Image (cartoon, rainbow, N blue to C red; front, side, top):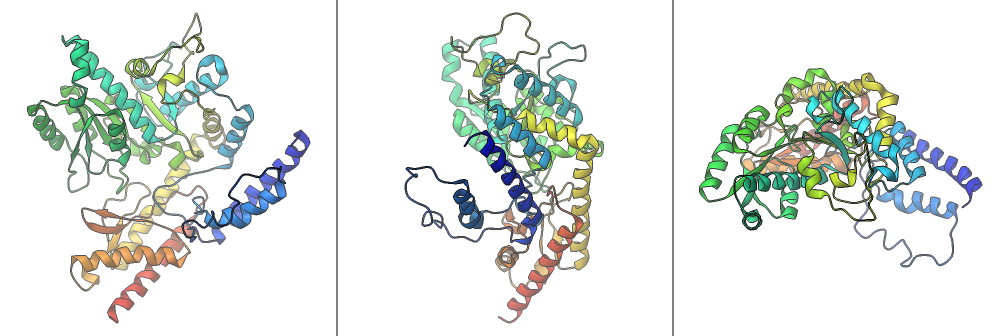
Length: 495
């Protein structure tokens, strides 16, 4: 493919993408293919000779499209949003054009410096404390800063590595030998609630530390008292607490942990405090939500995913640290083929030392496009629209009389179930009916959502947050919920 053909095919692909977005709401959001469907449709070896763009495009439409669950459908309410936007796509196109491997500053100075700039922009936009900024108000380099990770799972791993090094350094400062410090690594223990994302457990498995899962309270929040009790128990057993994750907007219910109380414990016990705000952090662009996040200014690290609810195509996970010393110290490995820039270093960050891989894409471009083409006002309007629709859905479900809300509706997530009194039978029957309701809704094909379990109680959890959704889509969701509930209750009454 030469430049002229690329010009032609590129325009065709843009048209194909535009057509897809114009029509995606007309098809069921969930794929219904069976496992292994694609293997039977595809050749079992790569082609020996080149194939045409037309043939590949035809296969996308006939073979790939049937197996796609349409996350960008306005009728997709599953898990949490995976926002896309045309400005972000344009930024990704520019990134693909440059196709850099940006492991240090000299690989492409603009890539490093734009990331530093836009992460400071974003940190200020969500109201982060100045200690998280890379560049101080006087233009000099700060101790902290932001870096774009691929996912919140990656962020968990790198901050837990930094936390481990911080704790081992403290033990050495207090007189422990290097050898003894290495021997106590297996005694390090990290703290999560039973509502913390599975990324926390995975990170602990990778770095080889122990984990204490703490039962959340009645509102599915991690509390100061519960954390203190867990630490007392572990210290009496000879373990070394080193890390705690507090969540701002849990996956199951969008609950907010006791950030201030957990920060108190982290301070007194010398723990690294990480705040996982993967979903709900985007809401902090709106000042009215910032009081809910009181305590984040005391954290060692903070993370949220613009690729969830802030109009930025996957992957783009924003991580800030208040002091990069332990992070960079733990992840830095010097080689002669990785040269350092001599002289002034205020804007010379080697982001390879802030992440797991060596190479990295120019992800800052798409975030830059989004922040410029929407502006802060457009991003705030995007968030507020979904919160308003979620509140409307909550009100409608309650007024219907058959449903109960299982967790406070603060952001765009509505967790509910059919009331026990509406369903004949015991607790198992109630759970079974609510689990069946999820299947009925998804089999209907007009909308897609997922269910969850809250301490053994089955519930439904539609998440409103499509970048292209309107109130009409939320009204359709309510309509389908009501119709499927009526149908399933009618079926049960005949049994």
